[in-house]
Amino acid sequence: MADRYYLYGIFPAPGPADLPLDGLDAQTVQAQHLGDFTFLYSVACQKRYLSSRKNLLGHEKVLEAAMEQGHRTLLPLQFGLIVDSWEQVQDDLVDPHSEDLAQLFKRLDGCREVSIKVQWEPSTELEMMMAEDATLRAQRDQLEGTQLGMEQVIFIGQQIEAAMEARKQGIADQFRQALTPLAKDVLENAPQTDVMIYNAAFLIPWESEAEFSQAVDAVDASFSDRLRIRYNNFTAPYNFAQLN
Image (cartoon, rainbow, N blue to C red; front, side, top):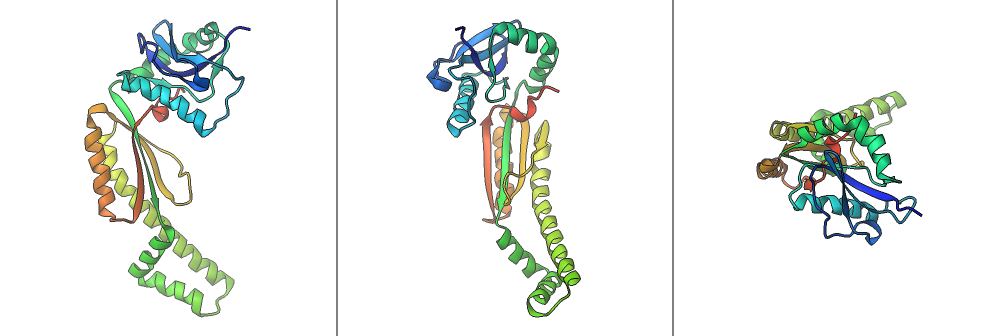
């Protein structure tokens, strides 16, 4: 039976040589050149790959190894992409989309993707908000100390909820204002958990990462220990390498 190929990412030719690295199923990572593009792949030993943590990290490890080798401009392919032949890749991707791919490479040239995820502790923020806002505090005390009609309970709950949402957006805005001017492009994603209040990816020049990191630290420091921040400064540009 003919080999099938698991694809990791696309690079402008000549791209990386075969990396001294094992990909999924401990298969050697290899390079295939198709016109102006180079594909990193390994032989696929499964018909379908489950999106387990091990497999996802294995996919990402291949792309990061290429970046560390100096091949910083790349289009990461979605996890689990398997093809039957290089003719299929040529016909389905390269031929119809070569111009779009070239434009994406031009956009990404000299840039890297970094991402930030900000979490807070809702109960702590609620108590801080109540301490700062006498009107809201009095409304909450009404809930605890008196018999209120359903409409009043709903109204007060909505007021508190709206105030918490405004507080959340105020924190996110401080990150936006500090970080957006340093980026060529920004993509905000939906929060992944109930306690996550900001989740964004930034496309920045490679050489400006230290400045960007300092800006993240400065905003974080302004909130003392109120926030938990996850900052990723080295990742393939998944958010900015989308074909329309």
